[in-house]
Length: 209
Image (cartoon, rainbow, N blue to C red; front, top):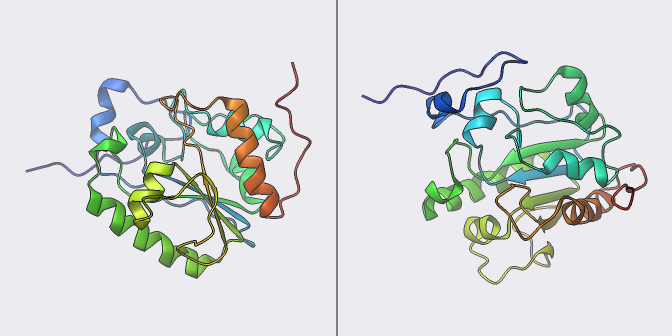
């Protein structure tokens, strides 16, 4: 009999890599603001580290939060490898930023997901967007977008025929495994989506030494 996934660790507790399989199949709650949702970032599915600390894009080496800072989307460079404090959460939610996933359950690698996992996740995501009505949805990963919505010829950038309400963008996956993108290039693409969402932004920082 398979054991249920472990509960998330306490804030500030760093998971041990040998223990990460305990979080297979765990889910991570969407990060959503109390007020209007302007920009919803959508990952593929939670990694095991993310599930362990109950914080999206938290794995060491993930470049999501450094890219937000370079883009001027956040005013501080956030790091959540041991979880997200309420104060840090507010750095995102007070700006109208949310985070979700195409597929809810955690795996070690995205290639462990089936074609049906993506299609089911895409349908649930559209239903979520119809309910939450973000101004912009930014899906992080062209392969995930194509698989979730059957758009085999979709390209990166804003989508002409989005699967749900609002404006939809496909932006690069911030995983360290994505060798095609740098932190600076991620920041540029994320800023385009943030500008489309009408966020108040700091000046971009990607050219600073």
